[in-house]
Image (cartoon, rainbow, N blue to C red):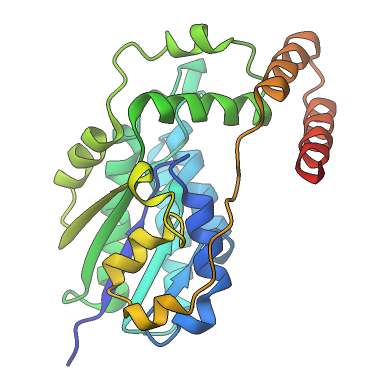
Length: 269
């Protein structure tokens, strides 16, 4: 009997995750003979619970994440190869705030407990023989933290310029180093690492890293369309405008509405 294989893609944030998830979802029917892919939309509740645990790591929030993940896994069929992709499986994005206003500066604190629950949940659902692998998509440290800054500037009420923001991370680990530290603490059968700098320009985009891990035949990949970029950062002009807006206004709802309008206009243009 063939061993069931589950590949978990837990981010990190801003490493091409949205592009990978979008590409795999759009090509799910073609890839169905080889893999069943579940992205953000498939388990919104469990994914949100993981993010919240990253900011508020109470034991009951960890248990709540496990309960929701168990419920999701119980609802899916016993396919031979499964991918679960959600960057919040590593916790909250650095730059967000934890309890008492402390800054999230890395993933390890949340990613290890979440990973232990993920592995335990998978073994409970599919049995002790299931092969569990992690795929980390990564990015060069300074490019990564710069992209996180741009994301937070448009998504939350961030009022730091980039210099001030970067100074809040004096001991920032390289994403590869942090991923290795986390993976060493989890009982995984295999761990794969892929840098956005290496796979981002591929015609399949960041999803090429996952397709490599899945050993999708080249003749199948040749028939797949070229990838479109997803969740692309804003221009420097928009970034400067968002910083001014964040500093001038305390109305977070109105700010979010206006930023979304400006982003849509820029995209249409």
